[in-house]
Amino acid sequence: HQLHSFKRLPGVASRAGGIAQAMLAVAWREISGLVLRSTDEDYPPLVHFPHAVISVARYREWRAREGQPDQWLFDLVVSFFSHSQGGGAASVSLLTGRTPISYPARWDYTHFHVAAYVASYWCPGDLVYRALATRRNPLRLFCQAFDAMDGVTTACGLIDKCLVQHPHNRLLPIMTSIVLYNAGSVFRWMDARCRGKQAKTFLAEPGSSVARAAVLAVLYTYFGRVLHGGKFRNKVLVIISVLEIALEVLEDAFNFDAFAALGGPLCKLLASMQQRRRALNGAPRGGDAGVKAIAAPDGRRSEKVS
Image (tube, rainbow, N blue to C red):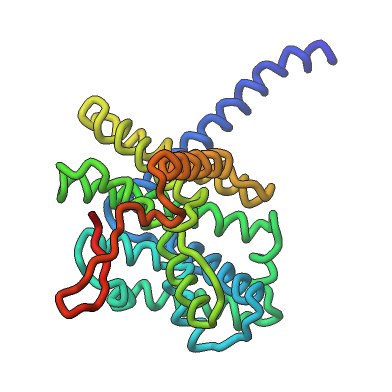
């Protein structure tokens, strides 16, 4: 009887492997469809709402760290730009010339953001915020995955528009991706400055978000749009998106920043090169080499770059 059972094990294992393979194929097909839809067609609610909820929760955490009280109207409006849709608004305005302030005119952006605010601030027992504030909580990981999908698919969709609308500007895809991933910090900088607090933008202190945005833009532009004339664009888009989603979920779960190892040394290298250039040119700190004081026609002194 035992011998007969052992003979049946390979068949059972084979069927189990077949079922698992079929389930993985279905999951891959669904994820691929959602990635392509998010990039090329619209903003699926399955992606939009988890992104909005975790963005408002991050805003609430940030305000708590800053020692600021809850102010319902201020929090509702500022969180939209500082953590949720500020990057998308700024990057789209870069391509279209529209003001970022016009972004809330879209019904889905406004409605989903208000719903996310209510869930993060007014949920009974504060259950949603407490779950999202707990590392490795299933709800937090779920929202983090779709937040990552929102970022990478928006970046790739904007890069496609850059290549169509401005095909001769080779740097625009990288610029747009950097604006997408970092513009929210500019709104946080404005808030800090309005409170009289010293702060710097990502332009003065570029960090890992700049490195992440630049790497994603270069990878997608070359492998998805340039290599073989973009023949494998959809496959490359899905692979990059899945890898970025997995990476961001792991980063959040285990509290590390994969791009800090790339962005930190690179920024330090560029700063060191800049200091060496100043030393070789004999320029004082601040980069004001070649600035000479000249007399204005009315006798006042002005500055002119020689």
